[in-house]
Length: 465
Image: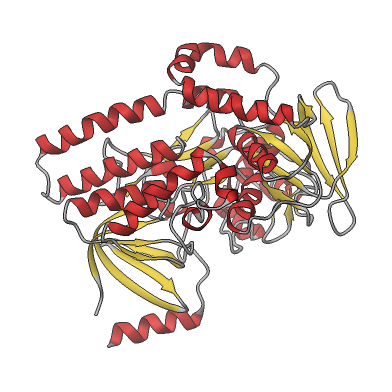
């Protein structure tokens, strides 16, 4: 018999946990499913196990704040099922899951998607070599396995995450060979329009300055004005080559290179559900359209956290609570007056937390080189297709991403375009001299995650009984 819940929450990061806690306080039945083995999401990954340890203290207050939220989530009474993948959502709403090799469909009156963000795919020559990872991957290893690289690492990229990770790595005893800073050189001018927001968000600015101070004290070599990066090696990373704005090219020995060029909302599930999205010109990515409660254009589907727009862990938690209030209101558990009253302070808090976001978007725009990589650079890792392969196909008439998918198989691998979608769209736009908003994005089809025939067979067997 199919299980039924008032709400299914997908994701147990700060937004998903906060939504679940608030939903349970309204008396709603809640199922929370998450791919990870424990609650926390990326920002609070493994926080329950790591927070009491020496590494937990070194990760800082930003990380430790997740421990109390995870505790409240555990006590909330929500049904929590980790190591569970959602591979399809159908109108009704039926949510299709796999767990432990078995598939199941559960019915929900409403669905809250707390999918978070992903690191922006940033292809560059050699990025598929062993020894080259993202900063986010390095941080996952630090949090879950307490792994500190034995050799000094190179950091390439820009944004708050590299600063945080470098500070955390230094506290944990790691060493950094150098930071290849790809941020624009005119950052001061870019920040000026938001001087007032900087004053209002001084606490967050102070955190960034503290991380920078720790990095300087550790003697990290900071190389500004980097416009291109290449990873070189025979079978694995051996050297990192970089080009400065003045055209100077340098090459350094390297064993580990961690890259990062910002984060973007995870949109595959909202795209598959045909929710409306808006193109962000500043960050060159799609963002779901949501109302004041986080509800999308598909009635009953809510998006919270960084999946609704990048804002950070604190903003994600607030968005989760606001969506929970909205769901309770739609379910007639709260009157309009009570819902608006409960939401008032949260909305004020959210506005405050998001004040710095336009400044950060202006300070750290996508680097042009990652949007239009060289011909020899692999852009679709699953099918090993280069930018040159995509350009050749894009020149055959005016195919869009979905037609090009049929021509080349780009976007048909296990990641389903998560790692190549934006790059492919920008290459097509440049080759055809069209705006990227006109080119569009892949049409996302289920299953949203790899699914075996054996798992499908269990779903059919259970539906017959």
